[in-house]
Structure formats: structure tokens, C-alpha cells
Image (cartoon, rainbow, N blue to C red):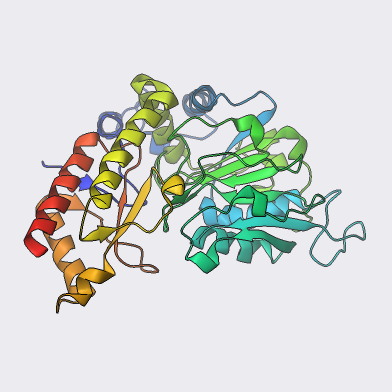
Length: 382
């Protein structure tokens, strides 16, 4: 069997040792005579898997004791609604001011497609203030914090730490002057160390750097619990889930198991500082190739380029000098890439072009193989 280099943005590649261990344990987890898929979520076998996964995640991210770790369902898009439902009740209020008689904003920084989707969903529950946006510039940078117009009375400030589609990433943590900072880290979590204490809430779908689709991780500061709107479904009430160790309903058990294996793999690699060094090396190699090219371009401001998702396009000047159309060149590029075992390089349908997602599980030799192909394709087309 030959495995390809999978550059998918998600569901994304998993570390091969994790897949092999899962395969070995598929029919019989550690002598239990059961697959993890078959276990009761309240049985001692799965409870031990769950506890170890949480402990390892806490260790990897140095999560303070006053934060709860929740293993939920719904994905990052689900959290776009679940977050406001959980943080706008109690002393906060709904969009129409029905609670406590006063309206409170939610501040958003709009840096791309996922930020935009979060804004749209939150506007169903709150008065949304877009405190800064890079939309006018094609979502190619993170607005400088000096340009942000934050509401000091906002319920929280929301950012998307890494825009999977546009390839824009925060390489700094905003100062929100005491207002809780909420971060969608779906595509950057565990790629490098972060100071969890700077955030009120962190969430992310697992299918990028953690495990299979279906699992969502929420890390929430305890003082933000108990603020859910009355309309919040019980299964999505952070306070209820925290009180029940994420088992108010049946959690995504197999996703938690695979995530736990990934956490152990990360620890064996040297933890998040080691992963950051690897990820920076991979990104530097790929961006270096693109920047030196006469054929390819990456539109993102250098200081805001993502370490995880690298979109690239053929330069406009190239098409002015040839009779080729971009669509046909894209097709030729992708076909040639697959012939070399380089898969899932097609850009998101919203922006087109190409995109290489180089998450933790992508080895350096995968990026080296992509760079070699980029150079060969350019040499035969310029």
C-alpha cells in the first residue's frame, strides 16, 4: 500500500502511527474484547480513555485549572451559534434587549470567510459590531489592533485565529482590555503554543490537527459558565456539559479516542514547541518557493501568512503573456500533482486557485515533494 501526501484542509491527514495503532486496536482495545466504537461511554474502559485524553490536552496546552475542557459535537460552524447562546444570557442580553432591559454587543474582527460566517450566525442572537475588517482588501491581512473599534461593554470579542480558506493567521494575541476574548482555533490549535489564560473561550473542530470530523473541543474559563440563554439546547449548554464531564449526552466516543492518540503522538514528538519549529520550517520552505517563482503568487501579507493553510495562484501577468486560461492550467497542475502522489491541492471553491494545508501530520518530505513539483511545473510552463 502506498500512502499519498494529503494536503486536504479537512478532514485532514492524521499521523500514520496513530492510524496504525487505531487499526491494531480496532477489534480489541487493550484486552477488553471490544472496539472503542462499541464501548459504553459510561463504562470504565471508555472513561479511562476520556480522562487520559483530557489530561494530555491540558498538559500540551498548559490549560489552567480554572478552565473546563469540553468534548462536544457540532463542529466549528455549530459553535458559531453555540458560543453566543452560552455567553449572552444571565447578566448579558439578547439582540432585542429582552433580558435585563439593555442590549449588549458582540465585537467581531472580520478576517475572512469563517469570520463572516461567525458574524452572520451570531447576529441571530446579538447586536454584532464589526470592530475591524480586512474585507475591502480581499481578506489578505489581519487588521492592526490600533484600527479596532471595540465596545468596552461588549459581551465578548470574537476572532478566527486562522482563516482556513484565505490563509491568514494571527501571530499575536489581541488585548481586549478585560472583555472575554473568544477564538475559533479550528485550523491552528495544537500547531504551536498559545497562552490559554489570555482567552475566555477557545473552540475548534477536530478535523484539522486533532482527529476525525464529528468532535469539537471547547476550552472555557469557569467564570463564563452559567450565562446561557434560555433557548440554549441542554446538549449545547456549556455549564451542563461541564458539570457532567461532557457526558450529558453520548459524546463522540471514537473521535475522542483518536484525539487522545494524537495527543500522545504530539507529546512523543516533543510537544507544541517542537511542532511549532517543524511547522515554521515547512511553511518557510513552501512560501520561499512561491516567493521566488515567476508563475505562482500568494496574496497574503507576509506577517500574517498562515503556517497551516497556504493558498496560491498563477500570476495575472502570466496569462497576459500567453493564450492559456487559468482554469485549464489549474486542471493541468492538479492532474500532474496527483500523478506524483500529491492530493487535495485544489483551492476552496470560493476563491479558486490552489491550497496546500500543511498541518501537524504533514511531514517535511511531503512539503519537499510539493516544492519539487512546483519547480518542475513552472519550468515546463514558463
